[in-house]
Length: 463
Length: 157
Image 1 (cartoon, rainbow over the protein chains, first blue to last red):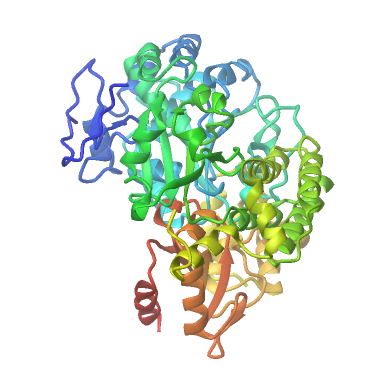
Image 2 (image 1 turned 180 degrees about the vertical axis):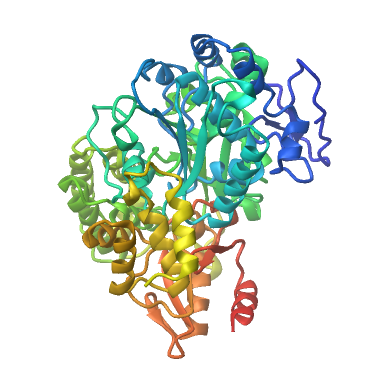
């Protein structure tokens, strides 16, 4: 791995030279999706254009590049869906019907609500034009006339930044009718959620765009054949779209070469929890976890690492021993028996009580279940009540088997993936930290907190 | 009756959708009316549904499904603190306890003077700034400390 960590003041290399990849080194990061980050006004159109922005769109549209050639580049790039599922973006694009008598839609999923995920927010607030350009290239490729970027309601100030960027792009001739003097037309709009985790699921999101409760649809039919207003729709994550301009500027191979086999390009990692410098870090796929952790300031307060949830709670929690040797890419994490997810790393130090952490997560899934499928609606509440019982000192040893059983019966029995998402933390926390759960049940109190109290009281030596 | 300002804002949102899909603007319309009136009363739901020419139940269903709509009064300032895992790991409990003590209310309660309401929030997608809270849905305050909370409350008084 060539990425180096430097503690020095960033020295941005940000002037655009034709044919030369524009990457900005910001404390060892490789900034593609956030390439404006080192600039004074990162979100402005002026800044983006200075860095070569919109040049790929202009070239593609003016030269009438063939859609199949663009899809080939995206396939070559190895770009996989950045929203968590990791489905190859180029392949997804090839599912859109080429010929359709009517409006086709393009949707961007910026509804980040999976705990620990906040990367798309930084693309929206620091580099909105790259997302707009990526969506416009996708619209050209797929023949979509109208696009929506569905943004998480809680990040309202960032929603407004994106709205402003849209007006700016339209005024400058990058959105709207007959772009660059051709017959290519694309209208892009910002729409918002208003507090529903489930709308991050693509069909729930589509329902929400249509002005309904966000309850997922059965698949098939997939959005590519029946999406927004029943029309063919391509849905990708924010970071996926934002990767497209760079891929089209420098070619799919250059993007793939940044990463490792089966994980092309860079990835934004949202690092939160017990680290010195929480935030987003864009690094090459395949970066060792230890490097990323160091970039994020290491474990805070000089404490030891206990566990990491590497891709949001719907990915299995990993004990420190499992993640310390892992690399940050799809295969690296799957080899370590977890998953990259959306790259949402929740870092927990040695003082974390895993029973209480799971208690909070189980409440989240219970609260956010949309209520459509019985196993999820009832199961998430059941799991939450059992863990609450344990936390209140009234747990029974057989509760651990009960939790496992209920979770296994949610998983795979629901319309959408929230069922699996709700089951995963329960199963993985109990699997890796079973003694903590047993201690809590036997003693009616937290093992970790008891140890800390013992240290504070001077009854035991620190670990 | 919707205000002229609200109508203008809703009309802008309607330009985003096909003419025969006025219902799609319901998310925005409810947000616009709630921002203006503080919360969504039965009358507000009726006003929105009439303007969009949709059944009242369709608007009510949406208002009831999404957490950021309030179907009961929330005082002048609704403070929503995220307590989900990333915030919890950075001691959102301390922020919640501080707010509860300072305002003298629990979650979902409004202060006697009608000024503040405290809510527990789910993940807001900004965990790098944990612990954090929003005021009236649209202003986020990150990297909270008890001192910072005091300063924010002071400014709102």
